[in-house]
Image 1 (tube, rainbow, N blue to C red):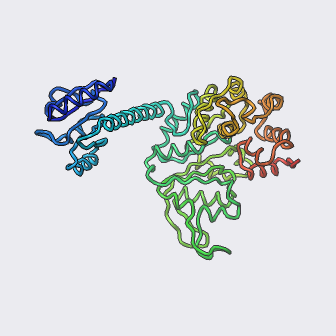
Image 2 (spheres, rainbow, N blue to C red; image 1 turned 90 degrees about the vertical axis):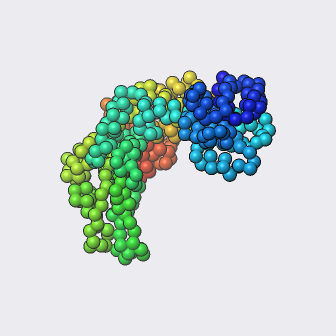
Image 3 (cartoon, rainbow, N blue to C red; image 1 turned 30 degrees about the vertical axis):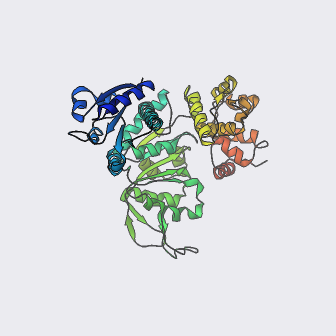
Length: 440
């Protein structure tokens, strides 16, 4: 039963309010002044305080700062401006005397509901901060707990961080978490997907250019690195950067110096770099495809994000969370997975990791006719194809890529192939060229 404390200096009003509220199944105590409240009661014991603004001695607004619960102000019509001032001090709402009983009960119910929602939100936020300290990332497995711990350790240091892991494992979420838990969290976080920028524009996009620096440069442009000055620059798919850009980026990291395209002026910048890739940078250094000095500068701290298939029960935990989010985003009623769909989610290989899982669930949410998600709505490969792709765990990433593309390209478009693999179409095309895989 909700508890309400009524404070009014008129006995007849206290008696009438007690009778009204008790008939509405509230537990009610009354007082005639702020001093009596402080002597006899603890405001924290009540779910709501109903307070007259004008009381003998101290004004009713003095209880606003003393109570963690909503304070509902009662006032005469003549003193409505003072009630508005009370709300500025933190009062939940006000109601003018003489008030309609039904109107008063409605306002009280609304305030108690709002208080319940706020308490639930605080408890949920507290639970998430304890169990999932990285915003947007859910995980209870040992590997994810290690990641959460590493983020907490590296975030305040300002050191460069290299995030490694397959596509779709949440590298940008980790980068944002490092930024938000750092001393730079009031400054910009600039995320750049290096693979999405055409090679002839990479230099201009990252470093900026002056007017007339090249054909089409009709006005000066600030580069993305300079935009992150004082904050964090996240370079996803950094392995796609051309060698010349790698050299210029190294200078920014070592000396904090940046020069725009077409300019002789050197600018000072202060950025923290977080880089990410799903490729083997160490191997690329050995083959000369990536600068060794930049690699070692990047990997001051190296974090390895586990693929979804190695996260055990996290898969179904994530699936339930993503289904709830998808229903809210698409304005669909709450849904749940059938046992068969849940088993498919647990057994599937998930080459695109969390991103693929999220896409599959969004597809199912859109296509579902009722409140149950059946296995076929997820749009995953058939059982036979799944068995072929998961029966060879010893395959290298390149071998797995080649096998997956060759087995599926006749049934899927390039966009669908890229989505299933959790990569961009540009990256798919580049890997086709590198591995010599023709399109069907």
